[in-house]
Image (tube, rainbow, N blue to C red; front, side):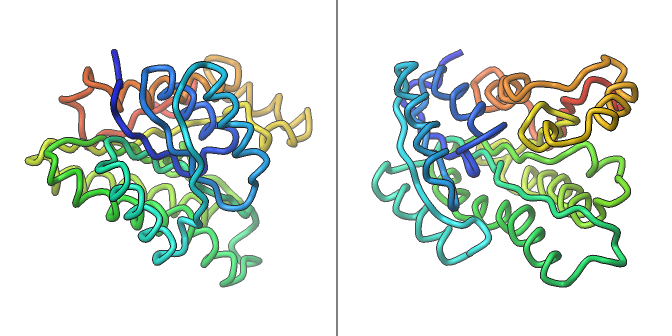
Amino acid sequence: MSLDGQIALVTGGSRGIGRAVALALGRLGACVIVNYRGNQAAAEETLVALEAQGSQGELCRFDVADENQAEEAIKKIVDRRLKVDILVNNAGIAADGLLVRMKSADWDLIVGTNLKGTVVCTKAVTRSMIRQRSGRIINLSSVVGQTGNAGQSLYAATKAGIIGFTKAVAREVAARGVTVNAVAPGFIETEMTAQLPAKLQEEFRRSIPLGRFGTCDEVAEVVAFLAGPKAGYITGQVINVNGGLYM
């Protein structure tokens, strides 16, 4: 499976799952544009890792929640590169807490990044993909968007929204050769899960049939498959990478 000559944009690509996705796409030959919002040092580490494995890449700083900023940045990419073949909407944040304690600012932040950011970036690449009659869009959802989770009502709402958005857009663009799918990770070994108390981590592991957390690379390999030519007849789907936590 080769992505030689293809241009891939990975939002939130500086760390965690985003970095793993960038590296996986790069290994298959894609030129990877790594988006980040604020952590330039982490983004540069991703770029160094891409170059170290012999892949092409570049950094692109913009906030996916800022519609004007995101649209302008993506337009410049399309104008310069002439296309974007693959979009991975990975940028996302969580602000956990009981609903009764959440503030409107929390809602604006989480929805703006997770859901609005996915919509804005998808809209920005769709026209060029339709024009070239090909394209792959992969949106990162979450198991909590399917099951819900106490203390994550706002986060779960955005991740569920991404699933509905994925299915609707998949129907809109399928006739033009563009596929749109979602990947829903469960508990993955990231900086976020590493900060959980050891007792809580063990409780989570006991709830997972495979008995362990997943890795960023395991999520990235699924994204890379969906981005490739062998996934050309898959669209509007949610691929779960959760160790059996939700079936």
